[in-house]
Amino acid sequence: MLEPVKDDAKRWAQIHERLAELERRIDTGFAISPQEREKRLQARTREWAQVEAQEHLDAWLEVLCFNISSEVYAVEVRHVSAVLPLPQFTPLPNTPPYVLGIVSVRGHIVSVLDLRVFFELPIAGLSDKNFLVVLHGAEMEFGLLVDRVLGISRIQRSSLQRELANLSGVRASYLLGVTPEQWTVLDAARLLGDPSLRIAVDE
Image (cartoon, rainbow, N blue to C red):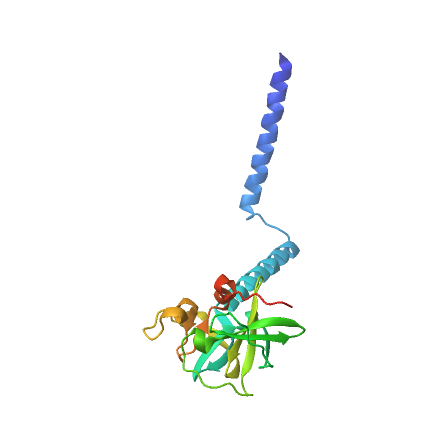
């Protein structure tokens, strides 16, 4: 009958030791070595810097700007795979009016969408100054006919306005936002994900 008493005494002694150790750590503020403290501070600094950098990146959009019918449009550059002068294109029969035709880009065939027709904008004739902006997604790729490429710019995501009285219909459906300068930023991901814009072409 003495063994359980000894075991209980041993367990109580261990508990008292752990409590005493905990009290010592509390008294010293859970002190760690200067080297370990510096290591942890550096790790936390790196983590905070990464979070701040990501938040900063998320606050800005890098866009390609271009003209269509005297209006300025833009799409995020992460969706753009190529920008080039409009090559010779081949019209496709039995396709919607906004499909200009097909072109060869880097050895494969892509369809070309005429946003002037698609967005019901004023239409002028084609010239050798027109450009092709090729959008690329996981499941779709096509080109946009544009009048002139203006360049790449960065805009604050928070500056975009979603609802404007002068934008309605199809354009409003693919709108990411409008900048204070009245640039229309298109939602390229939505364009690329719209099955109605998928035009089957033979390579």
